[in-house]
Image (cartoon, rainbow, N blue to C red; front, top):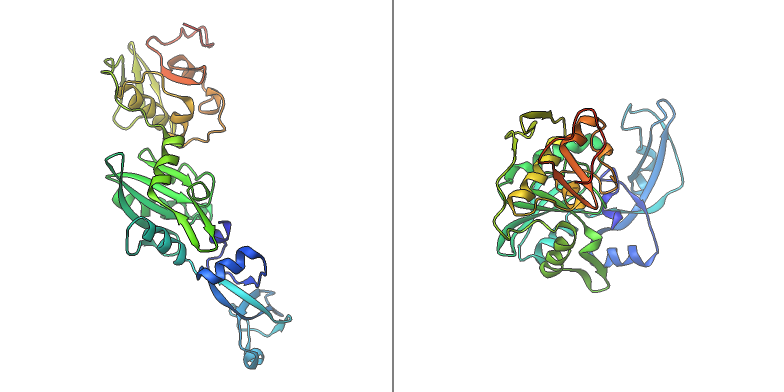
Length: 305
């Protein structure tokens, strides 16, 4: 579904006769094709493509400097109807229509119940890194519940994915068929269980042998303190969250996702290059934990105890 992420959001696409685009046209996900023309300004060299009636070709000027332009041969062009996908997804979740949080960027699809807990589902159309602050602000409007963010991207930047927010690739939960969009809550819940595996409370958790500041900036173990910078605080907070749920050694993959790190990270050094970090954090055998006793300063290597 990468067609949904085309930039800019008003981009005109040459008429495509492939089965996919014909299906999108028939479903209403694309505006019907219209005559378009590409122009290049003789002065500022600005290149533009826009819908133009044949009788208006002689009136075309540069929208940037109003200068004279050279015209290229006309062609049929389509345009994405961005409101179609969020509307269809919301309908499948029992919502009449989605709420636009950021035009052509972020939609709140529905509030649903997954495993008897309230979850808010969103659709995010990721444009560029320059949009990160606006995207995060839009999602932070209502963050009292767990958030599931659907996107055509496989992974979203850490600035967008927060502690209580899980990104799900849209292609894993939805697909286009000739009769329309196939998507539903049961499949969404199943995929979330696969990629999230949030620790569930089983036996009573052991008391904390560590102290973690509320903002996640400092970790204290046995009287020694580790300063946590940037996302390192979220990383340690995720370990602490798992500990409080009864899992003192959660999976590395879960902690990475929970704290906004890429699942491609395979060593603790990729989280923090300071050797001091490994004195407090035990990373081995696919699991991660806060050490009960920091390693000696003279020995930067992790032991197996």
